[in-house]
Amino acid sequence: MGIGSNTLAVTCEGADSITVTRMDTETNLTSDESNTFAIPDFTGTLMLRVNGVKGKDVTSVFLLVSKDTTAPVLTLSAPVFYADRAAGTYQITGTADAGSEILYGNNNESVYAAEDGSFAIQGTLEERQDGDALYIRAQDSAGNLSARQLALVARQAETYAVTVTTDGNGTASADLAAAAAGTNISLSATPNTGYHFKEWQVVSGGVTIKDDKFTMPDGNVEIKAIFEKDAATATPAPTATPKPESSPTPAPAATAKPNGSPTPAPAATAKPNSSPTPAPAAAAKPDSSTPPAPAAAAKPNSSQTPAPAATAKPESSPALAPTATAKPDSSPTPAPTAPATKLPVWWVALPIVGGVALAGVFVMRKKKRRR
Image (spheres, rainbow, N blue to C red):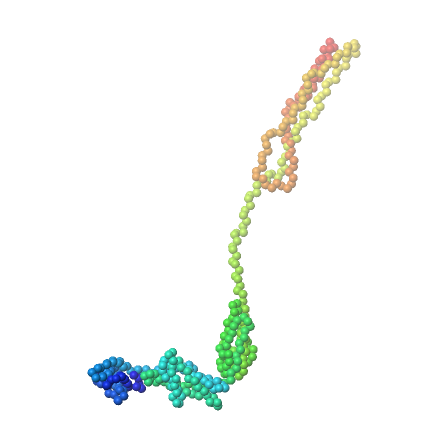
């Protein structure tokens, strides 16, 4: 039950009579001859009992009636709808309660909203008509009417093309491919990986682009998006690893060089006394008085002249080995000097004494022969 309807129509096939009773007061509602009953005013809900009587048989039906006083909501999809420039055809679209009737025009023409609430009104402007205005309302099944909405229709003005190109390093586009003069156009650009958007370049049309937008002039426009390669990210130089302390590892202590003074060459072996053994004393001439018989030459003493003593060897104590070897001095090492050997005194006197003794023996023999 809505604002525009407060009656209830009842049908019951074969019934002799039909009655409708208000349950809260047990009062029967009045009706006309066509079994249409007037519903009284009430608040909230109203329970009714409908009886169909035929002879002694009664069929009862209970009906809960509520008031629907909520008007449907009508919404237009745009404030202005454009008609084709040449043909003048247009379409007004919007939404309302599902199943509601959409009333428009001076003659209350209507269309119905679909299950999703959408509707569309088709129309055509006259040849010389540049626009129109239509009042539109929605009415639900309870008879409630929505607020009136005004839809404006305008013949579309001449449009001009909007062309957007790029330098190949990204993509770009405009929100409209064609528009009439005075229309605001929005641009968008997306760079390829490794690039960033640099600027818009106006190829033709003479427009001024600010914040990726411009106003359409009365002519075609071509815009080019320019992209720029990203700067290479500098790789930070690796932090130098701190070097260990530069003090060099101390060289092993140099072994002390042997005394720079050359090793004395071993003293030359002393030769036996070079003084010649004294020659035996000359034999005394015989007395001239009687020539003695020639005596046989006395043989020299058969004892052999002792051989010179062997050269004394140098002391056998070895020279001290030098401590750890150091690099020898570059000056050549002098040849070792032979150690001097001190000869005993008797080695020198022995040859002299031997010679004297030999000479004495020789003289004594000669004297004996004379006797």
